Image (cartoon, protein in one colour):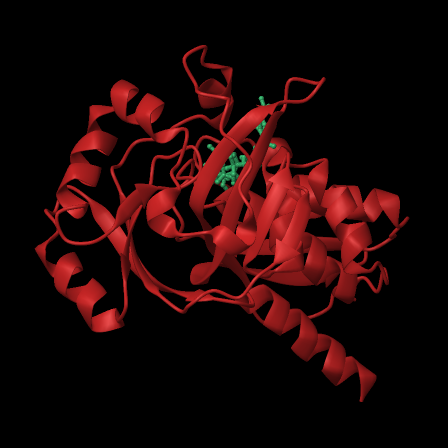
Length: 289
Ligand SMILES: C[C@](O)(CO)[C@H](O)COP(=O)(O)OP(=O)(O)OC[C@H]1O[C@@H](n2ccc(N)nc2=O)[C@H](O)[C@@H]1O
Ligand SMILES: Nc1ncnc2c1ncn2[C@@H]1O[C@H](COP(=O)(O)OP(=O)(O)OP(=O)(O)O)[C@@H](O)[C@H]1O
């Protein structure tokens, strides 16, 4: 008999508050320094365990074949690794723009791994889950650890940090920027000097992908020029989304109310621990009782 649908598992967004490119490794992957800021908003996923081995997504994403969807790939990877004989039917409540630099696909993969590890009783720890996740995407481990963190290497060396709480207006210029295309560009600067996390100041850092992306995509440049007039603003990841930083929710809402209707946006609070990490802790505490 099939089990019931579980409750919703959060799949939050992230911002890269800065992104410096220091060089490349022997496999051509970029060596970065970045500050991953976890946000309190994102997508949601629900899981219903089944007694066959099928992995089914009830609401496929437009333009993404199910076998390419990071949710299905994450579920299958865990099922194979842990020799799980059950299957699962997954429902996705999607809010985050795709290809926005806010980690939507990577976060969906991380939530799938964390949730099914509990529901299928695989008993992997977060380090093991993060190792599995890295084979799906560079940003998956950070969402599994679920903490605002300074990261280096190709993004896999993670050091949790606490930074002053801020509110962010995240705006979407309505275009999709390919991460692979940005990293393949000849004109991308790749020679930033390493900084010490303790010396971090927003205004002394940058996103090394921003000039390239704004040159290629005038929509991103236009949005940034508009936002920077109101608050310190920057592109996240390899784009296309842009964020503006505020001390309060009210200030963020005031600017959002003026945002021209051609751009969609959301407001989020920066958090030290992601909603996924809190959910995992809650579920584990309940199962220990
Ligand atoms: C730039 C960031 O968005 C920062 O958060 C991420 O590191 C990108 O992570 P992601 O979207 O999960 O990227 P992946 O799907 O792993 O990689 C997409 C492509 O980007 C390039 N890539 C990615 C990460 C990295 N550190 N160096 C790279 O050169 C590779 O060509 C890779 O084929
Ligand atoms: N569940 C998923 N959600 C979103 N995109 C997915 C998913 N599965 C596969 N993809 C593919 O991944 C691509 C990148 O989507 P994603 O939202 O992760 O980009 P991003 O926000 O730029 O990521 P990052 O910040 O990690 O670079 C999409 O264009 C889509 O083709």
